[in-house]
Image (tube, rainbow, N blue to C red; front, side, top):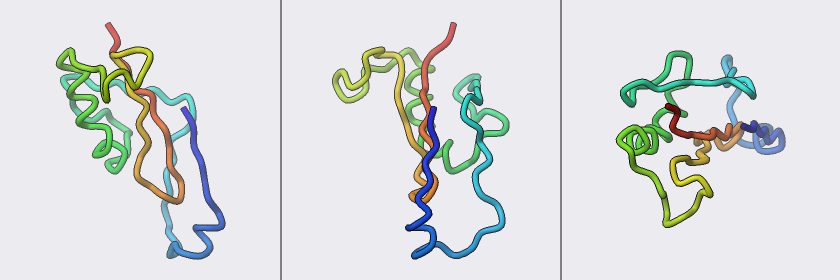
Length: 92
């Protein structure tokens, strides 16, 4: 859905890295049987895994009506320098 980057924080706090997130806006990942989709970064998966599992089992309505569509969730990875937001939703 969206990517952000905070160059000021990167400059002050982050050690140089060789490989940063390569997920592109518009990418679609489909989880089957609540398993990590191929090509999805491990860090993002760890954050969204519990939501995917809940949605895969028919649950939803996270945090008492947080989302307009109760079978969806807006989740961001935990990279504080380059967070990526993902829309999770069930598909038939």
